[in-house]
Each structure stands twice: as C-alpha cells, then as structure tokens.
Length: 224
Image 1 (cartoon, rainbow, N blue to C red):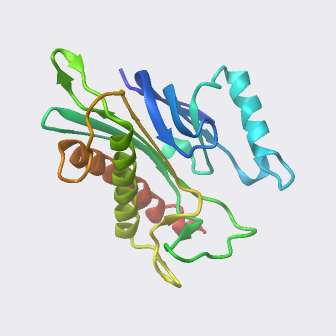
Image 2 (image 1 turned 90 degrees about the vertical axis):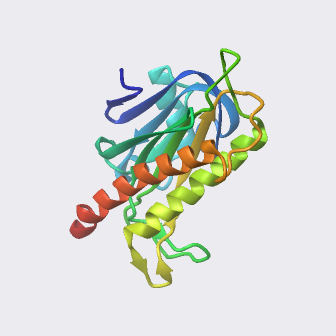
C-alpha cells in the first residue's frame, strides 16, 4: 500500500506512525510530532497580495481535518511528484519531492522575481534506522538536524546537476524551498555522510529531486 496519496489539490505522505518531524514548513514548523506531511497546490490567483496566507491555510486544513499535519505550499502541479526509496545496511529512507525552478536562485544572491510565477522545491524525508532488540530505532534531536543538513545538500546537488544557469551562476535551489525530515525518537546520534542513514537519506532525496527538476527542465522551462 502506497504511503503517498494524491487528491488534488492535496498530496499526502503517511508516515505510518507518529514521528518527530523537523522542518520550517508553513504549518507546524520546528520540531513537532506528526503522522503525516501534506502538500497544498496553489496558483498565483489563490494568493492575492493582501491575503493572510497562514490564516487561509489554517482554514483549509481545518476544513480537511488536517491541522495536525506538517504542510507545504507549492505552485508545482502535484501530479508531478516523485518518490525515491533507498535501503542501506538495514536502514531506509523514503523521499517525496515536488520540484519547480521558476523562482530559482544562486546561493548568496537574490533575483527580482516580482510579478513572476513562483516555483518551489518541497521535500519530505522519512527515515527508518532499523531495529534494535526487536524494537524500532530512532534518532536524537542532533541526528535529526544532521539529517536535515544532508537532505539540503542532496537537494542542492540535484538542482545543480539539473543545469539551470542564472546570471550569477548555476542555480542551487529556489527562494521558497522547504524540507521536512521525519523519524522516530531514539538514541542514534549521527546521520552524516559516513553513516548508513546519511547515505540512504542523501541518495533518496537526490533521486527524488533530480527526477523532479529534470522533468521541469524538459517540460515547464520550455513553455515559459
């Protein structure tokens, strides 16, 4: 049974259990406990300049019975979402990504994107550190932060490999990217690139974002 369900304008990633989720998502940012991560697709017309976006989203989530969910906003058609699952030495990572580059940026610079369409890259990463003494193994808060940095690095590598050149250099992301990392609480203290967790997390995020950005470059970019 798939953990990812599309019901436009919503996309839902069921984590399978209550987990700690670390993100800067518009709904329930920071370190929270959640069972699901949502995407809400929007268009420019949905978000006029005078709209209180957080209040609008709160109302939409309340109507859906989903105020508990960590939630992204995206202007990318959510039908074009990509899922990648990687297993390494008994640990696993599942990444779900939507990717648009219409407001791409080069790190360290800003471009004037006023009056243009907005894109974004939203990534949800679920980590499973395996079993210990017959029970699921979880991550410490420090490991969650390290996993978030791995996911961000993988996102950046995938965007750079997409090959979108800006006046300041190769694009490294967009101005509205967001990442959420989910895992059980536990004692695993490290999730860097020398660990199985870091390898699985990085490859899953890279594969999902790479597929999304490649698709955007091949289709949407040529219609702009």
